[in-house]
Image 1: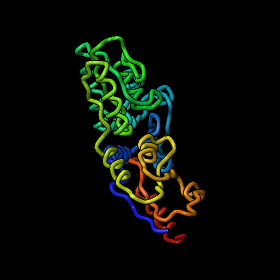
Image 2: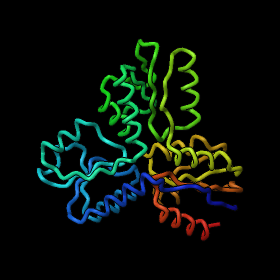
Image 3: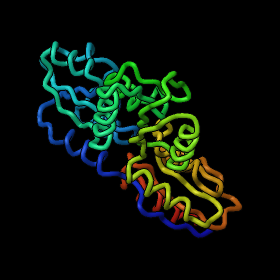
Image 4: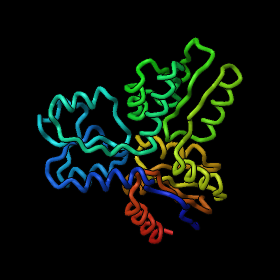
Length: 263
C-alpha cells in the first residue's frame, strides 16, 4: 500500500488562535465552557495543564477565570458570567463571531433569520442565543423574505444546494458560508484520487465528519492511535491521510510514523 498526506489539513487559524489564547492564561485553574475545540487530544492536553471543562456558567466559582470556546456563546451566557464576576477570556473564532453579527444584522432589519446547521452544535446554539427568534432549517418562518446564515463547518456543497432550494421558494438574503479553511480542506479531499481516505479527528468534530462525507472513496475516521490501529486497511492500494481543522499535527505525525512501520 502507498499513502499520501493531503494539504491543507489540520488546525485552522481559528483553532490555532483559540489554543494560543488559552495557553497565554497564566493562572490556574482555568475553567472552559464546553470543549475549547472539538478534539479529544487537545482537551486531554489542556486538562493536564490545569483547565477544567464545564457545561454551565453556574459550575464556575465566583471570581474565577472562564474561557469561552472557539464556537462562541450567547449574550445570555455573557450576562451570567458577568453576574458571577468571572474573568472572561474569549476564544471565539473570528469567523464564528462574524456569523453572529450577520444574524443580528438581519434581525435588526426585521428579516426573519434561518440557520443552516445542527441545532445541537455549540455554534448554532450561540447564534440562537443572539437571535432567539431564528429558525433552524428545515424549519422555516412564514415570511417570504428571509436572511440565511450557516454553521461554519458544514459541507460546502450542501450549503450551496440548500441555498439554491430556498431561493426557488423565498426571497433570500444570505451570509451563509462555510469558513475558508473548512472549504479548502474539503476541496483537497475531493481532489484525492486514491481508493481510501483516513480522516484524523474526533467523533464530535463536525468539520472532521464533513471531510469523510465529501470523499469520493471509502473513508475512515480515527481520533486516537487506538482507533487508527483498529482500522482494517487490507486491500487498500493508495491511502490518503487528512485531518480535521481541530486535529493537532502531532497526531498526524504519530499516524505517519505508524504507517511507515506497517506499510
